[in-house]
Amino acid sequence: MAQESPLLWVRDLRKTYGAVRAVDGVSFSVPKATVFTILGPNGAGKTTTLEILEGIREPDSGEIEVFGTRVRRVTPAMKGRMGVLLQEGGFEPYLRVREVLALFASFFDRALPVDEVLARVALEDKARALVRNLSGGQKQRLALGVALVNDPDLVFLDEPTTGLDPQARRNMWAVIDDLKERGKTIILTTHYMEEAEALSDHVCIMDHGRVIAQGSPRELAASLGQDTIIEFDALDLSPSAREGLGACGAQVQADGNLVTLKSADLVATMERLLSWSREHQMPLRNMSVRQPNLEDVFLSLTGRRLRE
Image (cartoon, rainbow, N blue to C red; front, side):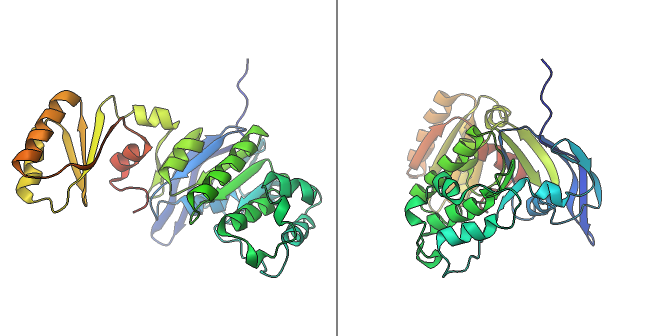
């Protein structure tokens, strides 16, 4: 059986601003009905890449193929098949939820019924509420409803859960899962690593305008091998105590108060770590033992944690 063509494909995408190479040879493809997540520290080139794919900016060079058509720049007709959720909706605070959705629906030749959009983003009971009276999570669901009002095939979600409480974040995750079940393709950016692991079919890690790793969360975590990760908090870690950690038979990294050990022999490392703790009178606060995850991959590739 022939493999289905990706919904979106980019090759050697480039964009510079003076001496800054914001996007420096980016290439990837996005299969249909998947969640494709772009991760990267501030300044990695994520926003510029998204703006090119959304048709807001024109690349200096590179190839883009979307909906089966190769173009230099995303066309207005293509934009009509896209939905974009920005970090700030900026809706008129004295409009009602139904009025906001009806207004944006009027911009498109093809739009979903407002009641259907309200149901998709779980805002039926807030249809007559003023925007100013919505909670943060409800405002984000309204912004998502606006992004979905034209029934797009490709949806861009730029940090959709930033600033939301845990329950509101989980509600947004459920909406995103439902979109994928409906056959929509989602390109997501996020500052929450657990969100990327929970939602993503494929992850693209960017740094300094380049793609430095791609794959499913499981594939990327497996790239670090089968070593076990030991983490604990160490307040006021002295130079001598830190040096002593090197004798624990593991790779050691200290990030503020957080100490991370990567060990191929968990039993031996734990024995030495406990001995080190007694010798230096250093409690192993909030200790956890786990397998490598996406956060470890990101840290190993960029030298930073995602939210730094």
